[in-house]
Image 1 (cartoon, rainbow, N blue to C red):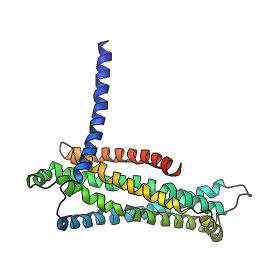
Image 2 (image 1 turned 120 degrees about the horizontal axis):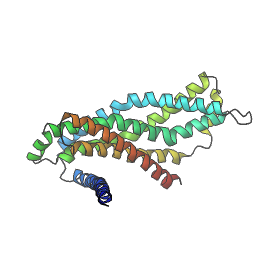
Image 3 (image 1 turned 90 degrees about the vertical axis):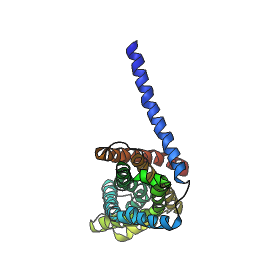
Image 4 (image 1 turned 45 degrees about the vertical axis):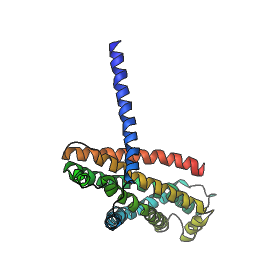
Length: 260
């Protein structure tokens, strides 16, 4: 009987820690938008974050999108063995897969690893070296100073997703035409088949929400971490896991709300 009571207590503490962390996250979000830093300083921080978080990630985004589009096209072509099915469906399937899921969602998970780890480690290092404490002593809202520029910078994230869409479809065209799976005319016909502009809007809406998650969850884990250099690495790993979980759950919810 005593053992059961101990297990119940441990589970209660386990769940309470998670609830407390969620509450702390939303409190952090509120503090980010209070007591803003001077615009002359904030402008430089935002431009720096745009360069590091968005433009610095375009290379890996283009690389991944190109080959993902190619793989989708090849797999679709290999599974359309019925001669009654038109070849244009290869381009149609590639377009739908890239625009609806691979560009906004798959790219965001990759960005959670690249950008999220960078955010957590940079803020965590500032916490370890007491630079955040120095900002607080000077009367600066450290959350606004550190996190707000990242949120604003990642508002340009849909621009990167638009490039991912284009490159993914282009990669599909390269793989389909030069791989001998379809003709250029059939693939382009499939791209234009039953195109719904709202699907692009849906992808951009998801991208903006994912960008906010990528900017804030890693910042939370970096800002509130405790310990030394070893804990910075652990916090980066934890931030990546929870950012990916949040993106996957939000992807399901947003798909149900926007397309259901």
